[in-house]
Amino acid sequence: MIRIRIEGIGRTQRFLISAQKQARFAAGVALTKTARRLEMRLKAKVAAELPSSTPYSRNSTFSTAARRDKLQAVVGIRDRKPGRGTAPAVLLKEHFAGGVRGNKPMEVALAALGALPSGWRAVPGSGMPLDGYGNPRRTAVAEMLGSLKSGMQQYKGRGKRMALTGYFAIRPGTRSHLPPGVYWRKGRALKAMMVFVKGAGYRKVIDLPEMARGVMAKEFAGHFRAAYRQAVRTAR
Image (cartoon, rainbow, N blue to C red):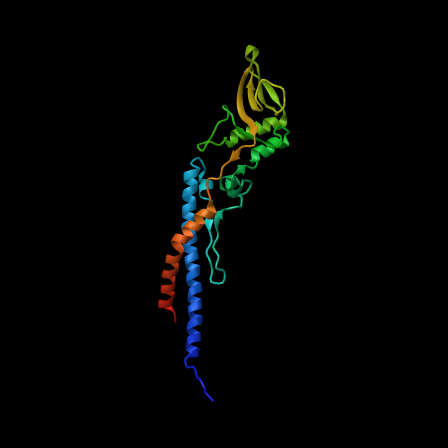
């Protein structure tokens, strides 16, 4: 009978278990650092491709940390809205996927008033005051929607200077010499506040999966090696 005795198997098992733990630790660290790097790239891409975006949109990127028991890190745009506002992910989604954008809150309000049909969007007219990012000023939008909701136009001034003043909407399909939209009137003077156009399409300008593949290929291995060496040095 031939007997074979293998010595040191316990040490080998302990080594393999330790190596597995250290590898999982290193993978978690590497994923977290790679995700942060990708988030930095994403934030820079949003600023470069969407120069008129607000700080609210540009600062809406996020990344999560991987854990040893969950080797996963997430990078993206926040999808939670602040109070009554619109979530950044909703505002920016067409730039990531292309296609027709969704309705903005103002457009939802115009649709509820019966002024904006399905499939149409509202863009600022020449009379609409804009903020520093090219968006309609909130105070002007609130005044316009409030006037349309009340359906009131008032005569202002005295004597020969008295003029009918207020907002009115021209729905698409209405026979009019004016394009569909919302107008402000004072006597015979008109200002186009919002112009109605067929659903505006967007092309995809930010390819997050492709960015992730590039950053992963460039960054992960180096972060993993560094984290694994550190884990081995500090292992007890």
